[in-house]
Picture 1 (cartoon, rainbow, N blue to C red):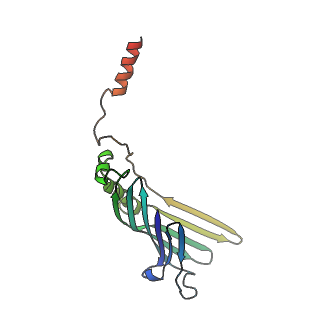
Picture 2: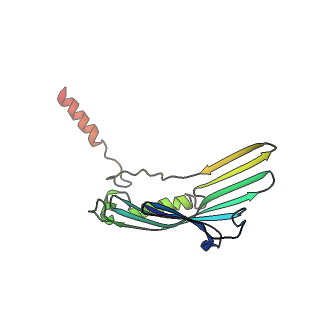
Picture 3: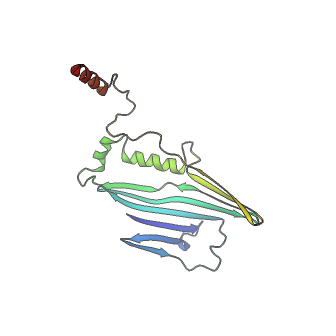
Length: 189
C-alpha cells in the first residue's frame, strides 16, 4: 500500500504539508512558509491518494478531498469537517493473479466500478445528495472549565454484499435447505 496525504490552505496547494510513503519509509514534507502561516487557518483542505494491491487487484484512488473549517473567539471554538471531492479511481490487475476485474464482476452485485462509485458518492454527498460523512466539534470555555460537543454523521451501504446472489429476485419458495431438511427428517423417521 502506498499513500500521499496533502494538507493545504485553499488555493495554495504548492505550500501544503505532505505525508507520503515510498516502500517501507514514510516522509513528511513541510514547506518553507512565513511564521504564523499555519497558526489560525479558516479552512484547510486535505487530499488523500491511495494505491492498494490486494489479492492481485490494484486499486488506485487519487485526490479524495476533505475540508476542515475553523472558527474561534475568546470563549468559543468550532471545527467542522467533511468529504468534499470525489476521487479519481482506477481498478486493474488480476484477482488471485488469474482473473481480470471484469470476471470478478460476475460474482458481485453490479460491478466493482459501480460499487466504488456508490461508496464514494455516499461518502462525499450522502444518500440525499448534500450531506455525506462529516463531523462538528464545538468547544465552550467558562473560566477554568471547558465543555466539548462532538457530532458526527456517517452513512453506510444499505445493500448487503452477498456473493452469488442475483439482484432483486425473490428467493425460491420453499427454499432448497427447507426441502432438504424435510426430506432428511422423513428418511430418518
